[in-house]
Image 1 (cartoon, rainbow, N blue to C red):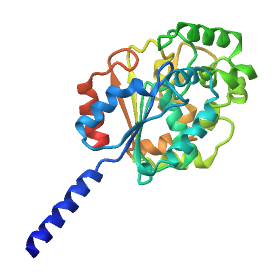
Image 2 (image 1 turned 120 degrees about the vertical axis):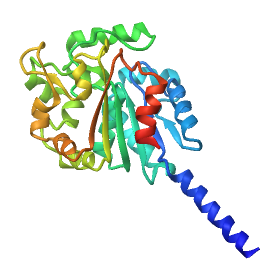
Image 3 (image 1 turned 135 degrees about the horizontal axis):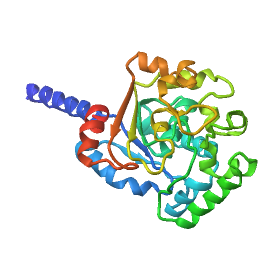
Length: 293
């Protein structure tokens, strides 16, 4: 009887360890989407890792507000809200993996840099880490909101009102107006340490176990595509694109990319296809099995 009790206790501890082996996962959707739009990925993850805690970020009271805010809410306010939201979740206190899709990718990175949360792996899919210069297509089904964004960007992406209220203007990076971008960009220029080097941004990013970026070779939404792995247009023109290693952001190591790369913590994947077009099989074999289990 005594041996049986010890055996049962051992099994219980083993099962508990197994259940705790996989960290929770947080997902942040992109422009024109909402938290429940990632439900298929939540099911995919939980199907591979039973009992794992997975949560999707929602900015607003419902799907409609979540979608609207993905176009027209100050990104800095969104990041502050998410920082508090994740800090208040006791299930994330011991660490979690953070997956960001499209603009949710650079927003998730901002959370990592600004908030000192226990993020193990940051994984971004089609994120605009060096911003965009162009708005060729608009994801989501709401053409009215898309057209309004286009009009506001045409009016002036660096105008104060547009910067404060149009999400896409806050990561608009005009290579012909680098000084204006650095001065006026209220979000991207800050998290990329373009104006001043905020050491905590770099230190927090260096705490990651892995920083994973996924680029889509036929992406028709992001311009330039190379922004998804920190490439950007060479200053003063919009045809030649510099790869990450040739950018000043990397060479100066302002946010720690060079150090992460030298430490083997930086990982890039290339998917042949349009924006966020990956198969479930690829996601399971490449992301779930390598970074979430």
